[in-house]
Length: 418
Ligand SMILES: Nc1nc2c(ncn2[C@@H]2O[C@H](COP(=O)(O)OP(=O)(O)OP(=O)(O)O)[C@@H](O)[C@H]2O)c(=O)[nH]1
Ligand SMILES: [Mg+2]
Image (cartoon, rainbow, N blue to C red; front, side, top):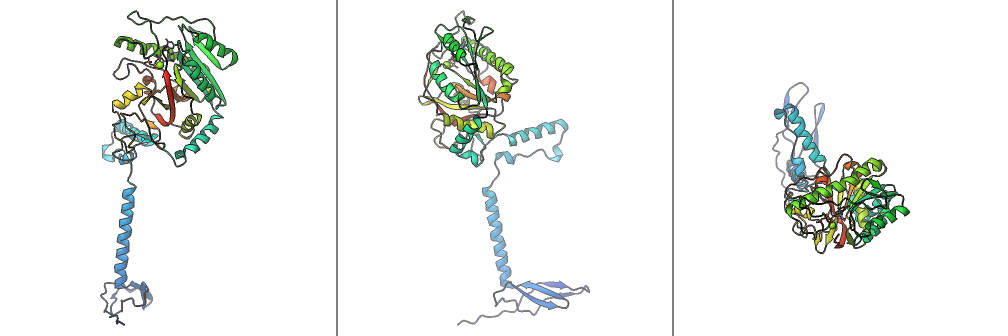
């Protein structure tokens, strides 16, 4: 059996005694043969503890490993982009500029969305652990909606091809709410749109049919809107308009949509928490109400949320060209860590787990707004690059927290000619 060789101590510990004199601790056996970490010795009135030489080494190694592990953990928990930006330092303070700057930094930090790491350019809504479960969102969303009220609003002209399908789905959705209203602006229809809507007012006291300054009238509303060219304004993508006519269409649609906003904010705003704007010229695949409820949950869970657009698709495109043009303008770049999501494909086939994506504006033919968010706002259409066919953008562009929910999937079977 090998004999362990005891070495003489190499000591560096100096004790200061109560009378001020010092005493180096020497002549002690520092090899820890018993395995205990500390040894002790009585020195006058004091008991002195010391570590054996070998255990000092073990101690240093342990501390070094712990520090390395801590640094690695900190590195993994690297702060997101937002946290790397701080308020102004003392030396840079400059009265009102400082106030403004710091307010903007705060606004950015407190906003609903985040880039979850540098290099990820898709701005996603921040989710808590509970928010991540779709079935939880759907159940909690449905439960919340039972205590909420909604106003559904639409403009429609010559809508008989899409109205029945849209209204069928709108009525199913309204049934999820405690109370709901339907506000429609109609004019100049040459089909039976007005009588279809008028009949709805007879059976449902919460339907309001507007047009020509009248409410719930069977009389036709004839505005006969024309473009500067003299051509009559008609709904639908299929209409071949000149650039000026497209701009004029944007102005006309904005004025019509502001009519329902004026009515709603004068008569119903304090009675409903949500506003849904739909285009009723569409034939829909039946809306999956769970997919809508799981998205509306965010209005309950995120008080800052102002607008949430459905992920409406037609064939293999995102339905709304205005949302598409936003993406193609690359306002947020085109990189994402989700391999099947690309701006070119416009979030087509987004994975089930993808949270709502922050956009500058969207409509998607089914767009939910928090009622209070639009109170002072109306469409403010101007001729400007990228939005000459997108009058809705001028409304949501006035808001800060606007999202498309890739999980609120709706499918357009057909957009009908007006
Ligand atoms: N009341 C009313 N509604 C209209 C008028 N023009 C269009 N609409 C309706 O507004 C909605 C949107 O109109 P569309 O012309 O289809 O507009 P869009 O789908 O956004 O875009 P395009 O199809 O590209 O023109 C549809 O439900 C139309 O029926 C109008 O003059 N008066
Ligand atoms: Mg349309």
